[in-house]
Image 1: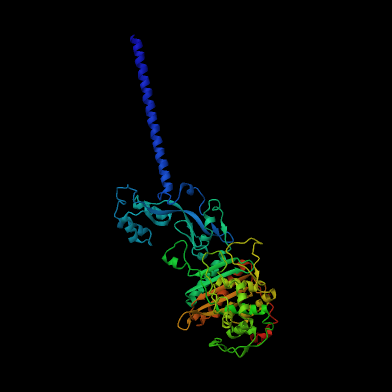
Image 2: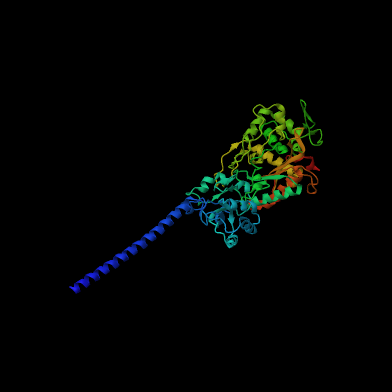
Length: 567
């Protein structure tokens, strides 16, 4: 009996040991399960809150970043890259504890030492108020290390996908920027926002028509031109005359899309597409082209009265005496208001209006950018005087892009096409609409070339590039007399090479001053034209136009009409 009792006791002990072991395993398993549950809850919390991945769900974090924008040659203009952000989390030490170990002013001062442009008072106030939020959106690795050395747990540095513009401020008005909410603003970032953000397409880069080499040269020459004559601003565009593709578009001063601040917000207005101007004498070739096309001007040698024009109580006159009569070639070379007004008068208001409509002057410019200025359009019924003033670029205000598209139609054989910032594949150019006969376009190429050789466009005559174009210097509206005589908009509208035009170039300066660099002149011949003269040799070889002194437009049939050519 004693042996049996011992065996029963031993079995009981073993069962208790097994039961205890099982309970221990169960409690350990429950502990691990509880920890896993906490981890899952934390992951879900991080995905739906501003902690960890700020404003980014776990699913979003696994998706490709915002799509890349490149120039026509694949050079990156806007791309996403992982970067640290600096976030203040006042609950890092617990909801009931103080958000910071040190005094808010001390921590703010330490951050100021790392980030010199930091608003120390505003950050200290944020700390004192315990208000969570970003302190900085882009933190370099070495800066992140210095922040860690401060030793404040409330200063968190989550890794995020940041938008970066590797070319800096170049093409800022074309690109725009990405706001804190992750959406594009202002430029093509806004236009292409859906495509760049769509998970199905965001991994594919989008190529613009912009050529970064041409864009950089345009901005550089515009900036130089502005400084030489102390202009308030500048605008420029390089446009393919056969496709409407924009190779460069610049509005100065520019903003930096990598750092949007109060100053940058003030500079976002695009002078090329959104601001309308009376572009003055650059309209004269368009008016002459319309008159030639309509048969009003058949003989370029015809002498026109060049004395002041009286229309009611208004008088149209030239800036200086050009003689009693001029032919059409001399009119463009010397930029006569009076003869251009008389040519427009013979063309008549209705036909002048029709040509302007055909060139898109009555509606917003055609381009993908969201900000497009509406022209100051004279309306339906033009009186005689309005037609005459429009003929030499007054009484109608348009954007420089309007002018570029019109000049492209005037020199490319007569076809107007909308401008585009999207790179077009061969054969994708829009059909466009005919504005001028091919013969009219051919004649205008001769006349524009003559202006650059013998007239006001001489300073744009880059050797070997056969530049043709027209100056325009218009007084800005305002003042007691309707115009401010001391404030000009100076423009040079050009195309090259004129024997077979491929590109239109527009350079415009807002309120240039007479300086030593411009021989104390404020007109476009002395400030805008030289910009084109320097730009064309820089960009020509890059876009397939090499200098050639053996080629040119044949102007032999109009040379006898140009006194300067026969001296």
